[in-house]
Amino acid sequence: MATWRMAPWTGRRPGARRFGEWERERGSWVLCEEVRADVHELRAILAAPRENQPPEHAELRRGAQEALDRAMEVIDPGAHRRNLTASHVTTAQLHLNCARSLWMRTLSPAELQSFLPAVCAAVKQHLAPADEHRIFVERLARELREAQEAGRPASLTEGQLVTLVAAVDTAHQAGLREKLRAGSFARIVRWIAVFLFCAVIGVGVLSALWRTAVPLCFTPAPSPGARGDFSVVCPTGASASVPAGQLDARTRAAAGWGDYIVVMLIGLVAAGIAAASALRKIRGTSTAFGIPIALALLKLPTGALTAVLGLLLMRGGFVPGLSALDSPGQIIAWAVVLGYSQELFTKFVDRQGQAVLDGVRGPSPPSAPAPPAEPKR
Image (cartoon, rainbow, N blue to C red; front, side, top):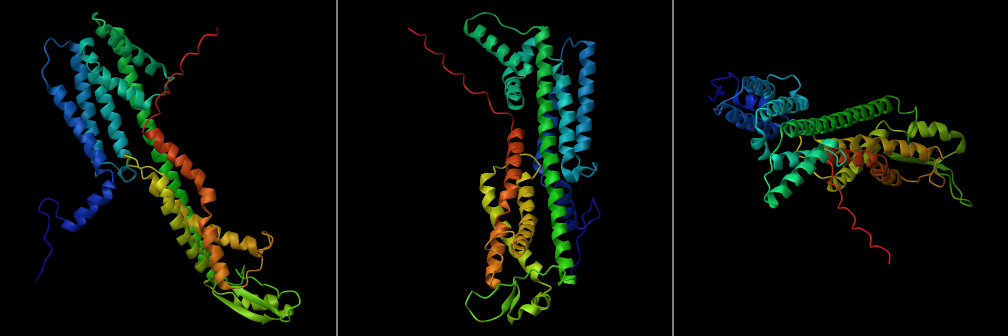
């Protein structure tokens, strides 16, 4: 008889343990390992012996070790309650940046000068071209490079060292704000998508219970000169030869409980196709926040609702010439068009999402200066 093999160190079934790990990480496993790797690297650097270390530097290194310990505690997905939103990665990065800043304050000007290219890269990635810290770092790097090319001795002063560390701190804080902004935007979009999904379910349930309240049916009149009565056309059926005096009663009788559900499903499918085609315009991101997925999920309930609302506007005569659809096929066809047309409303959210993703990668580099104008002769 087959039995489940228990994991010796957890007492849980292997399948349940793997599912729990997947649920805790939620796609941020790579970023967690990146933080752990940075912590191990910085721990090894701090553990290296240093001669003639001032007492204040020993205190700074001790504080850096404590910050690294706190980062390792936070990055554990089972110990942090906010791991499902991937904010534990950002919190651990905050402690890691604190430890890196404390370690940089223990370096001498000559030692910090060797890290100047990395400092310039971090500052250019996260700070705007007009930021004072970025301007100072770029000018300092240019002056040191020109001095080295000219063969002159070049070294950092104590004041420049302090300013460089402050610039790195500012760049790291800007990078964390970018990630927090991305996480907040993704959560807002997901919550709006959940609300719209609940609205879709509510409309479907209410329309099934009270199918005659607002019937989603059309009553095309016979063509001028033709003999015959009105007809009632619904998404799931039609009724012909209805006298004008019985039109309202026959419309309510012809309305089916699945009319709204069919239209919303068609709109949802059309919105899904639109979402799949819109993903080609959105570049991916290395952060733990699934902004493209959240934007795609937002389109689905929006398409279902736009299909229903669009047909209601057509039924009320809001669109001239399209108030009398004469077959269920036409209603379904318009539901497809209206469901796909949600792109008119969600394209602005797509643009904002792409702007947030671009912000996470850092501000764009400054444009090349224009060539000087030739003097007039």
